[in-house]
Length: 153
Ligand SMILES: [Zn+2]
Picture 1 (tube, rainbow, N blue to C red):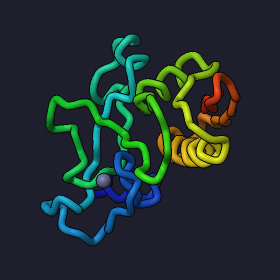
Picture 2 (picture 1 turned 120 degrees about the vertical axis):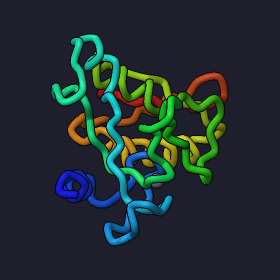
Picture 3 (picture 1 turned 180 degrees about the horizontal axis):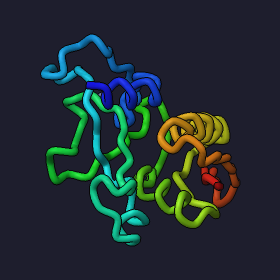
């Protein structure tokens, strides 16, 4: 349990997948209880041939029910329901590319500038918890009667 509290403290007792608080006192057998998700941080670790216990794994705090570590399904970070976005990009692969190469990733199109601003603010906040230390900023570009939201690292 020492590892769970360590990871929990570091992640601020917030689930890295659904972004909701995790109660440290909840039973670990409960779906809303805390668990450690041993997600291979991304392909860069695999490419380096790192294995379990080799420093290639990123341990993140997740609800037991959100934790995909025991299944074969890749974790998906959902876009917030209140955002008005068209063609949203999958968040994890985009963020992984930013971590690996930096540069710029187009994340979504929005019908209005206000929608784009809201999506941009949400993304920067969300990614700051997903990949602390990446330091992303968002760009909004008007074009073709729409507003493109992109992340830059
Ligand atoms: Zn969760």
